[in-house]
Image 1: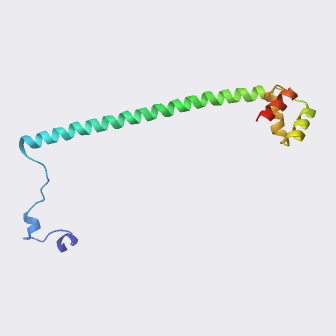
Image 2: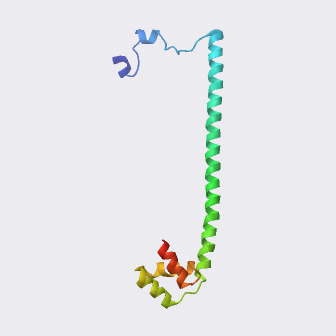
Length: 125
């Protein structure tokens, strides 16, 4: 132990006389074992590559679906913004349902400015 701690073996010691041996079989059995390891490594690598490819494809699909959803949401918001609402209708909804102005306007816009339909929709929620 002291020899290893000092950074090496002293001349004439047992550690210098016996080089470290790797646990690799020799001959035909060693060749077969090495071939098996190579095949196993290849299969494991292939499985990992397939997993990474599937993961990358799913991420790309999610991003493209997210872009479609974002554009659909933007289109919907533009449609809602173009709907004209009466300030009096907004006040009625705010008073009756005790909601803020944004929620009242949103309910009216979703019902294309129809006060009765907006009231019914808010009752249903």
